[in-house]
Image (cartoon, rainbow, N blue to C red; front, side, top):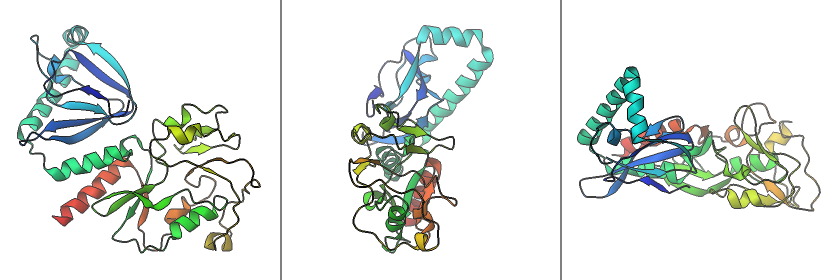
Length: 301
């Protein structure tokens, strides 16, 4: 489960964990004894090998916590060591990686800024995201064109909340779907209305019955129950230019789930990004977000 500690720094190591789904946060205690986030590791990698390389008992050098809901494959120490004995090349590669990690553990001074960045990334669900909407507060002029453009392309209701979400180093992650790698919203949808398209977008199909399970299961509060075709209608430059979605909402009746669909029916990408006059709104991947916030933090020092 998200937030569950897989193992703690100082625990005796007896198992290797292979991350099948999700991602984990790696943290270590700094010189003041404070647990500080160091990095996160996505699916397709493994953790816990360093404490298994010796025959005698050894101890974990870091704490590993599930950043999102994860699935793990477990390899016991005896089986792991049998694998190393029978595969010299695998052993060489794992030992090399372990040496590199050991050097990092000894020589790297974890500053608080790095910890803040990684904690921010994990808490905002970025580690599980495929595509994240961010707003550069240094460029944002508060015109709300992003929300109006979103509403104009989605039956009158905006799928993003510009003022919601958290910020770090002037980079805000507003309330808008992350299109997660492991979407919890899809886990209990009776009509299978939620689906992932080939390009990664998680969308809600018209067969939604309005049960609200996805709203309850989304940990980031980005899905809402909406009556489409509301009474108010904002001016829309997109409609004026003929770029708005042609899909018409049903008349007000039963509420259905609504969220960002990356404007998958429109050419040119998300309307919120295209409508931003200053370039403050961006859709980027997790690595790009980490790099962007890191640059901002460095510039502010």
